Amino acid sequence: MYENIKNDLSPKEKIDILFKLFKGENISELIDKLDNSAVVGMQYFLWETAAEFGIICRGKEFSRKEITRKMTPTSKYQQQQGCSERTYSCKGTYCIHTNPDCARKKIKEHVNIIAQAIHQYISIEQQNESF
Figure 1 (cartoon, rainbow, N blue to C red):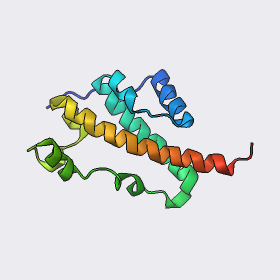
Figure 2 (figure 1 turned 30 degrees about the vertical axis):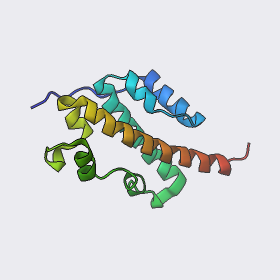
Figure 3 (figure 1 turned 180 degrees about the vertical axis):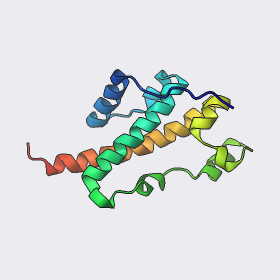
């Protein structure tokens, strides 16, 4: 089996991501600058951030489904990539070891979609704030 890779981001990497999110900038190019471990860490960090912002913005009505429904279904993604692995093994955290290019591509799509949701949450909160 594969070794667990440390998928933590440094505080600087997290700040860079948050800075870009608050400025409304595209964060997917950061993926190209990160090693495989940090790419997985970025995805985890964005999920955590989306959940926190979503709960602040939407309260009890926040659901990860509002984000995941915009993502390409795994079976369709595998078909597009010509992948014959079992569907349940098509996870960026697993494939980052066996097929990093494909995993990075999938994670990049997810990161973009999660970031779009976070941008929306930030926008909503900025409209609710009086400056």
